[in-house]
Amino acid sequence: MRHLRRIFDLEPEEARFLVQRGLEIKRRLKSGIPHQPLLGRILGLIFEKPSTRTRVSFEAAMLRLGGQTIFLSSRDLQLSRGEPLKDTARVLSRYVDGLVVRTFGQEVVEELAAHATVPVINGLSDKFHPCQVLSDVLTVVETGRPLEGLKVAWVGDGNNMANSWIEAAALFGFELRLACPEGYDPAEDVLSEARSRGAKIILTRDPVEAVSGAEVVNTDVWASMGQEEEAEERRRVFQPYQVNAELLKHAAPEAIVLHCLPAHRGEEITEEVLEGPRSVVWEQSENKMWLHAAVLEWLLA
Ligand code: CP
Ligand code: NVA
Image 1: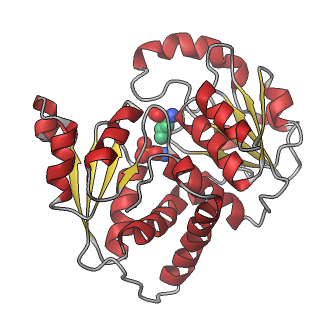
Image 2 (image 1 turned 90 degrees about the vertical axis):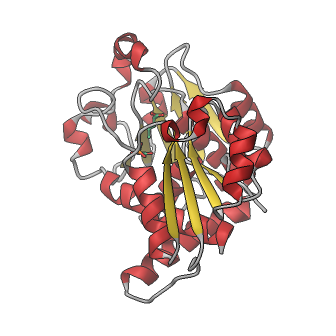
């Protein structure tokens, strides 16, 4: 039995397989060929934070593959009244065939996985957002860009998304350049593990340096879920890290722009860029469903 707590739970060939499989399932279902490997399977989703895309794309993927879902807002579970995670994990494992969890601390994902007897999938924690980044890689591959030698820029917060991009760089072999303000770097342990696996990662304070010649430019919100009280301070610190038309002049001529959404127009990205010709964000959000389909088929079929 396997879990997907972070991208480093995967071998490089497994990560590549999931991306290719997601594209295959997309082609197959879009051309009307039935594919229901998860008939009779049930996925539970425990969410401690809001979600539009991750929740609905996991549930839709499960239903499209013939399975069913049970959505569990954490405030409706006894978890909210102090029932231990290890008890919750063992009980829910007897009802469902897999669990997606969206939470704060990564240790919640780890603890659930340690005690669950079904696969546990991280649907975002404060530290990682593995399925999002795998589906973002799928989106890049779908545009025909080879990952070999690809230059990817990350501009903004060294957050859960940045940490997962760092792990993806180690597994897929592209070059990743991150521009983060001082005090907002990605996790040191993630960086050093990725580097020890041979990842090509450049960390700078300068967004222009990160974006120069990049074929993929990525950003994310300045204040993640749970950081609402820091939002004002972050708006001040992150101002020079906005992805706008001026910054994109330094990127490769055919560069695409990714944003996992939700976006804050006028903060980390301008309306012009988000709605402009380089933006692939709508395809990117659709592709979450296809990558999740591949993950669910792989773990639960
Ligand atoms: N990108 C993403 O995870 O969006 P949601 O918060 O809507 O799930
Ligand atoms: N970094 C953001 C991603 C949202 C999908 C957050 O954690 O809120």
